Every structure is written in structure tokens, then in C-alpha cells.
Image (cartoon, rainbow, N blue to C red; front, top):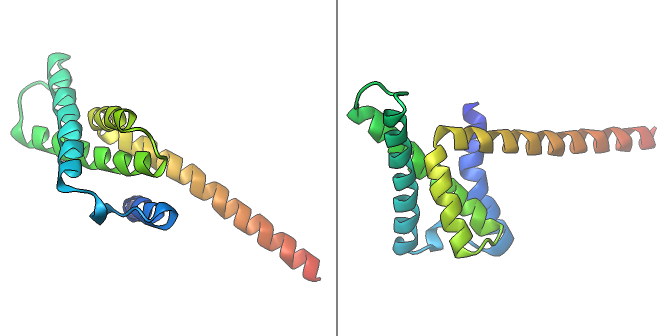
Length: 137
């Protein structure tokens, strides 16, 4: 699971660089600032919503900090995906905010997508190599 997490963390920026020569270090500070702010706001709203619905019984600073950090990470990953997919800035901003609100759920959703995609790639690779081996016999 940690390996898949690292693959997702390192793989998405690498895809951006390979596809369109976009790379995380080429985005401006202002761009990262709005991405992180939108995502963090989504995380804060999620935390306040949980407090209001009594999913969290009392205010905990550490829990709030955790929620916001996860929201910022999830929002940043979604930002890179939106950039790779060439979404408009408004759609990207909306996706970043929603991903920030989703937090851990958003990461689990992305993990499921990556697992399915990797499974397809691995199956295609092994199916192709089996066909190659049968042809050589």
C-alpha cells in the first residue's frame, strides 16, 4: 500500500513532465498558493461539517491539522491530474476544492483508480508476453 502511495505521489508529476513538458517546479508560487488555499478550505469545511453532524464529538487541534494537511495533499494531486488532462482553470479549481473536502476519501478514490489502471497495464503486459512466447515455440 505504501508502494502504491509512493507510485501515485511520484508517478503523476512524472506523467505531466513526460506528456507535455509540464513539471511541478515550473508552476508559479501563486498557482501553488491558490491550490493549497482551496484544498485547505475544503478540508476545514469538511472538519466543521463533521463537528456539526457530531461525527467528531469535540474540537481537537491535531485532528483539524491532520484534516487540512491531507486536504492540501489531495488537492495538489488532483491539480496535477487536472493539468495533465488539460481541464480549464475553473474546472480545476472546483476539482481541487472538492478533493480537499474529500480528504482521505479522495485519496482512496484515486488509489482505486491507480490500482485498476495498473492491473490493466500488468494484464496487458503479461497477456502480450504469453502470446510472444507461444509464437516463438
